[in-house]
Image (tube, rainbow, N blue to C red):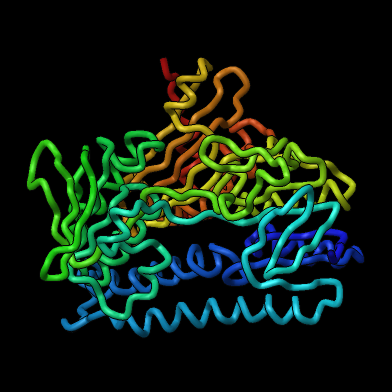
Length: 457
């Protein structure tokens, strides 16, 4: 059995920087990757989808030139193979950089394959058994897919990025973040798109105004929605098309499309690890249970990224790495509970979110004040011709601290960071209210919004 100082399983946004940090500290590290360096974000998540979103935005602009007085001759069309090629080249460049750096590092030994535990801090990989006192699990998650959908030829977020031909009619099961992003981009590419959601509204974890506004925007672009779907399932028809059960209260009981994308959530890849043999505990959904410092119930074994269920985003995975590194090699202790929930939904216009939703704040029992400003009243948004959406903020009426905010509109995914920074600084909202912000920007209306707070009963 070969022994290392540390073993890192998975090369996602936590595992990759961690393995280099451990090697820099002089540790001998085994680095295990089953599929591709860089993990989900780089290969099948953020990088490729945002590259597609950018192409979809170009299509949108080309088709809406007259709105801003620009006459573009008809005939704009998507070249999906070229879009895919650009995406693949972006990924290849980043993956190659990781591969080269790993190969050149004398303290890192790479194992390509699926690693699984065989005993206490023992792992089998490609028929070889290795061990280490410290093991870091960063195995990520994958799309949820039942056997019924698999037999019907349904695609996941990973497989749809490999298409060379544009779907005539893309049916998407799941009206949440992944489904909405793919729905808008393929509609802009030229596909007919239907999104099926079992709840009575899309992205139900958001406040109702967010869900309603985004649905209105996407419907305005021609996307069809079927909500309150029940008895869902799918089958391949004789002509090659796919029939997806909807069984809604209104409309046809099936939706017939040429392609079916599953966006029903994700499941952790922990089932590949044989965790029972080493005693690491998971919850009922398969996520590895960790403490505030990312350590499992077994001392020296840690879980980072999507597989611990503590974030599910690239930025939270990277923060997991930062927590491990700070506590092992830094001067300041860091922990999961230090971070504030923040994320984006990258439809167009994008949503930037931080902290509590209004529903969560009301449920907390706090006395709160709220601010709201529609994008249609913001000069910069009107000048850009992008007036969909709004900005809103929730304030603790007792402390004047910001509890949460949403910016749904042009630049919302970037603007939200300004509010997030004030929350991390633990300063009252008046710091932003009394600031001077450049004109003409969308951000300049945040102080204006904060001047008109209203108490929420």
